[in-house]
Image 1 (cartoon, rainbow, N blue to C red):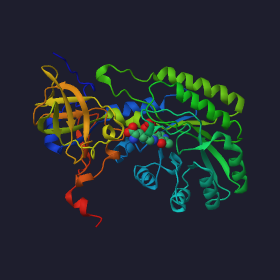
Image 2 (cartoon, helix red, strand yellow):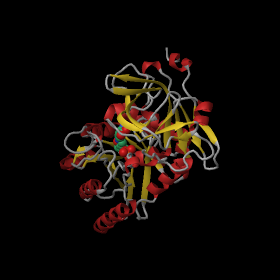
Image 3 (tube, rainbow, N blue to C red):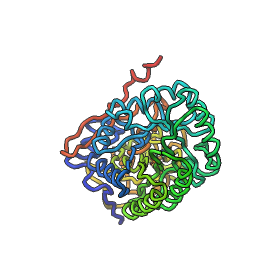
Image 4 (cartoon, rainbow, N blue to C red):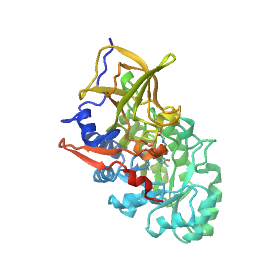
Length: 414
Ligand code: LLP
């Protein structure tokens, strides 16, 4: 007999999975305000340095209500597109609270940020030239590639020798020339080495190499080290959290040493996305079928990869809980199953060969840690409707924070 414990303690407060799905439909993204706020605070205070700021990377989760909470918790935000800037402004972020990290953009996109006075970084010499042409005499930040990368999958490593991002550190002189040519002021330097590291060593290595480059530029206002802070996706196996306190102290040590040499206590920033939002959410779905195909058991649910693409795209692991009559199935017989969705592709698998409590039709499946790159990467593939999102608030009330798509939504652009 195996025992399954709820990995997110008291997540549902006064409600339960059955009640939520009954009221708001299935599948359903369910967020917990307390957890979201706690993660915001941990990032906001990560580094004991007086001029430190965490900018929330909204690509991980751009729900308007969650963005407002992140802002209340003192986070700024970074954006990758005019669409993200647009939503950030709607959530109340002012231009100086937004950092536009552009990548391969048109004049039109660059001007969208420039005209709003939103600090912008460019990540190639050709885009720096474009920026200079559009805003001569202005200020700009440059994204460097520190030469070290890290991440849970090669598709999310964003620095090092095999990625499209950043300007190589040995191109600093070319950057200087272009700045001069267009009378641009370099306001800051930024980088992002990749996503989901569970030990800080690569990140700290990346910090050191970008600070070395920063030393060669006078008058910087900030250096931004990017995101990538991991969360334990395998809590059921006892995976440990990132050791924030030690990491923050080591981080501050490097900054203090560097500022002594640079002669100014400039601003330092990080760009966490996943860390802020992932654990605040459980994705609920419903079991509609069960079958044996040859020697495998398939559990057929409404959790297709249109709802959460991470397992199909990166073979990502998400812990799974099974609920019956509103409570977690904690003990009893187990079996090894494949949790599948309702999309017409054989890669539509949420969890492969996973040992779980024996599952029956109408059980509810909970996909843990679904708050980052979940809804934000969801789609209407197979003309399926993207799910609703609800928030369990600190006072235990439950509110709808994004409605489910309707069939009319599918026809809206024709
Ligand atoms: N800053 C920049 C410039 C980024 O490109 C990213 C993520 C972040 C910050 C935030 O990284 P985070 O702290 O969330 O790791 N869809 C993948 C992750 C892709 C991350 C892309 N860039 C996933 O589901 O694992």
